[in-house]
Every structure is written in C-alpha cells, then in structure tokens.
Length: 241
Image (cartoon, rainbow, N blue to C red; front, side, top):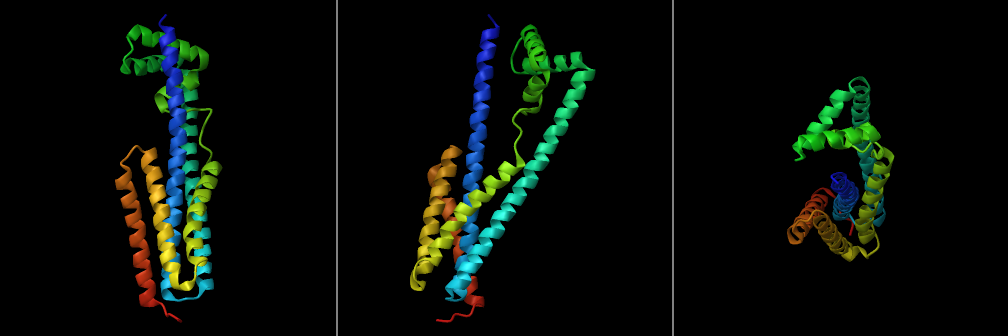
C-alpha cells in the first residue's frame, strides 16, 4: 500500500518540473524581446537625434538588430554548452560511482529520501526499488537535479534567444523607420513604451510578481535609455534639417 502514495508525488513532481521548464523558456523569451526593444530603441533614437537621414537611422537599427541577435545567440550557446558539459560530467561521475560502489550509492539515495521526511525503512525500500528500475535516473533527479533524458540543447537555446531579441528589436526599428521624420521619434517612443509595458506585464505574470511595479520599472528603464541616447545624438550629431 505504501508504494501507491510514492508514485503519485513522483508523477506530480515530474509534471511540475516540466511546467517550470516551460515557464523558464517563456521568461527567457520575454527578457530577450525586452533586450531587443531597449537596445535597438537606444540606437535608432540616438541616430535620429543626430540627423534626419532616414537611411542612416535604418542602417544603424538593422546593424544593431543583427549584432544584438548574434550576440544574444552566441552568449546563450556558450552558457548552455557550459551547463550541458557540466551536467554530462556529473552524470559520468555518477555512472562510475554506481558501477563501482552500488551499495553505497543506494544508501546515499535512501538518506536523501530520509531528509525529505520518509522513515528509514520506507526510504531504503524506495531507494532500492528505484535503483533496481533505473539507478542513474533516480540519482540524477534526486541528487543532481538533472533529467538525463532531457538535457538543454545549446542550439535550441541560441536560436530561441536570437528569435526573441529579433522580434523585440523589430518594434523600435519599424516604429522609427515608417512614420514621417517630424513624428518618428515620438512614434518610436510610443511604440517602445507599449512594447515594454507588454513585456513587463508578461514577465510579472510568469514570475507571479506585482504587475504594476514590473511595468513601471520596464517602461522607466526604456524611456530613460531613449532619452539619454537622444540627447547624446543632439549634442554630438549634426542635424541637416
């Protein structure tokens, strides 16, 4: 009778980890889009403050989008590759320990479940049954917090980060390139504020945080970035109109 309650939480915990993983991906996507909005908005508003040449603004914005997207992708690839290499090394060590000292490893697994609140007898039984089924998987999840069958892909992370940045960067780029010169800065400002409000709302909802504070912080940082870069463009640029 004791095995049934154990099976239920295990399935629920795995489902919870899957949901948490998806939320982390969504949160990373929102943050990547936010970076794209702020970064490219700062570039195009600064160049717009320096002159009225639409081509120069567009070229600067596209260059910022490409450079930023590639930088985000490269950084994410290196970061996740390092994490993946570390996880693989930990799994190799765990395989070696399970092969050379299986009884000690089973006792270690039982101690983990004892620390979670199981009685010593039940913890030993759970550890034994899990080890009989798939010792590596049991130790990886309980001891290392790793799913051996679902390691994060560096390429997937890189492309996701690049796509999120690109989507965010397109907003200020289009907002300043399409309207007439006389209103392009204000149009860009309005578009960026709307985009940052949306990403702030999304990040707050995903993180169960206060929406108002997250939106205000997001919009405030973006607005300050555009203001500073526009002033710098006015001070160091040469206007032609």
